[in-house]
Amino acid sequence: MEHGSFEDQSKATFSLTDEDHTLANALRFSLNQDPRVTFCGYSIPHPSDARVNIRVQTTGDPAREVLNDSCQDLMLICENVRDTFNKATSKFKTEKGLSSMDIKN
Amino acid sequence: MGRASDSDSDNMDSGESITKVSVWDLPDVPQGKLLSHLELKRTRVFCASLAPTNTENVNYSGAYASMGVDNSVRFEQFRNNFKVEIMRLEEDELEFDMIGIDPSLANAFRRILIAELPTMAIEKVLIANNTSIIQDEVLAHRLGLIPIKVDPRLFEYMSENDVPNEKNTIVFKLHARCKKGSERLRVLSNELKWLPNGSELILATESPASHSSTKPKTYTSFSSSQDTLPEFSNNPIAPKDADIIIAKLGPGQEIELEAHAVKGIGKTHAKWSPVATAWYRMLPEVVLLRDIEDDEAETLAKKCPVKVFDIEDIGKGKKRATVARPRACTLCRECIREEGWDKNVAVRRVNDHFIFTIESTGALPPEVLFTEAVKILEEKCERVITELS
Image 1 (cartoon, one colour):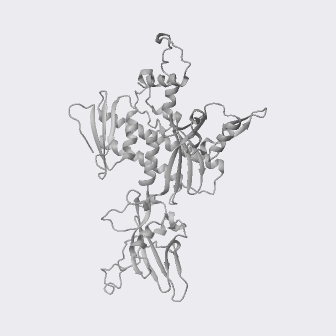
Image 2: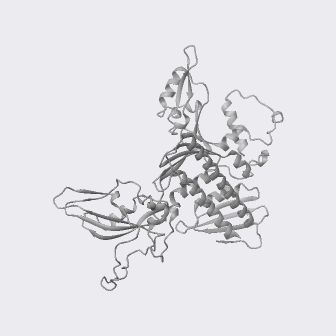
Image 3: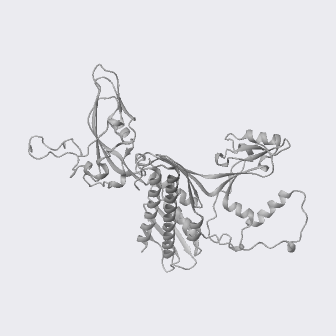
């Protein structure tokens, strides 16, 4: 992973290897929710390379930090999704009395 | 710009009854709250009679800044709005509603479920004898596609230079023979027998006579038996379904082989995908824009092939159409196809409400698959964070 920024820290392109739409689109969503971001988008330069470029432009904060925060946000969201999902499944199981379904995790 | 075009369409809707009002007498745009038509556009996809419209999501945090509306999603807000409701949970199938989440995340989960969750599948087949009519390579491919009921989290990936050992390989044996003069024989997946001690085939480079005292080298090097592990001691590894036909043997034909299963992901080959499929659809919303009564109600109820509409009695022999089962709607748009009906019925989808279905192939239960998928997305984020710092 590299990033192309020179003097101006507020604009950068981050090139993530071995990633695709799965992460890039989720990150784009997360970045766009950040009020500090003025522009954000991603592209896959060539379909047979496992690589995405994420462009981040901010109102002044270093793009690197903003991307970092977005990743943190996304992780928090994921954690919350997992939590909510687990609660919902255990609630469903107790309600339905699916004791026959032996799940160890 | 959005507002200007909307007020145009408002005027058109009201038709001839336009009364001229001075611009200065118009009320101010309310601050801090989205106008109802904008809110509708923000949260719904419209299914017009020709094609869905308004399919794009508004993502940018400052999209409604001119109205004093903050479109950024703080984590607190997400946490308060996000809901999961389980609809159906069976051994291999799970249907649940995910409410209050962006399509980009729902899609990320779906993509991970299909292509990036690991399972174990047969990758290498050592064929000792195959006199059946099915070719070696076709047979090997068929074996690869058989789902194996084993938790992949108990195994490691095997990289190119690794030797097959008890931590990264599962070995199965298959020996089937159809006796001469007997009927044709079907070879089913339950004839794959697990070898917890690893391969029994002696390595081709090994000369059989030289080491009579030491154990001859085989195609795997297991240091211990897999069935001593507590996970497998009472629960032998086997294909998930016992009745998959692998081959058919004619009289005198024989198959003898050894199959080595390793850990992999669906991106490499679909045989490693843990789901038969995983998909989602947005919640359909059907709204009657005016009261549909009597004969019209009957026509409307008949139009819908999945019976979304019901007819209720409202007394005095009058009947009225109601939307009884919007969830059943397949968005076929049959109800708004006829000229003018799109003025009576609106078919929409709720932007952030996903009906998510996971069909597991059997290695892991579907609810575990979903939590694992979310964990993988977290790991991806973590990787970016460590590479940034």
